[in-house]
Length: 351
Image (cartoon, rainbow, N blue to C red; front, side):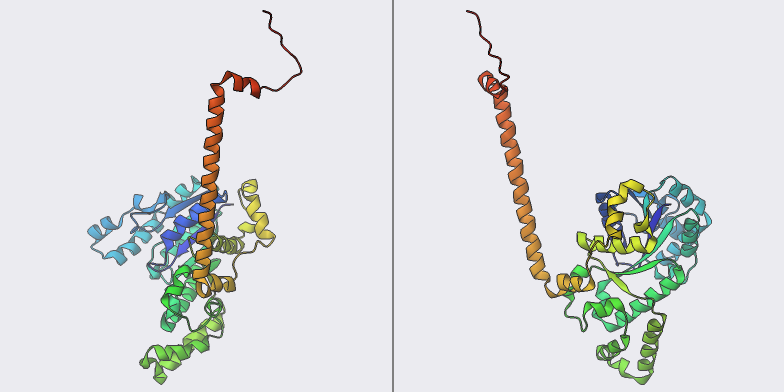
């Protein structure tokens, strides 16, 4: 039974960067992984594509032939893929049991109310794939109450539309400290509970929000999100191994990979570690690492990296010295005789 991640999210949220980083991370832990590009506008991928929608249809062709703009052309391309989904199914069958990452387009209507992407995902499910939808959002949305509320609504709508095991992820969390102080701890934003407190800051953001009409609307939106009780967020710094490990642990649990993957012994170490409660980063750890003590941790990592490089350099120099000594011994008969073990037999040469 193969497993896959469906990577969705608005433009600029880091979907392609995530696919590139996650593929490298999975390869490092011994999990065979392939990436499928479903974004017809992504013509310069940073990762090797196992399948690319642009080999079926290109954005430029659609815009020229159908006289559509970029957004309309992307919708048309996904409808074309839905009509020719056998092309995708055949390509996936060629990947065998590979763990697959689907890099999806960034137009939000594709995963909020348009049906083509959802129908394609359901057809993939019929091939036996265990899917997890991953909705990425730039953590910059935490800096303004209005952006955060919009993110809550978008995340909730995508969860209801896709109707799959789903994780919402705040990306670029390593940049959050550069945006200025947040009015709440990170845990407030990731848990998305007791949201009424943010309404006061929303009024400070814009005088217009103080009008009773907008105040009532904002409170109704926040109550809606709370009543569903579905939205919560993971965090991610794609260049940090521990952050990637923590997120992958959550994904594996959501999709069932942690309880028995298709690769058997090839991934046993990771599966056992997750089942035994491998400790990742809690939201408080993330707060400390990337917000409260970011500069201190950055300095510690820099020193550790320098020490590691120094040790690696010393080891290389020692290997070179040893090889040089061995080479010199090869040219010295006396040294070669000294290196021979004493077997207790004395050889006497006759004159």
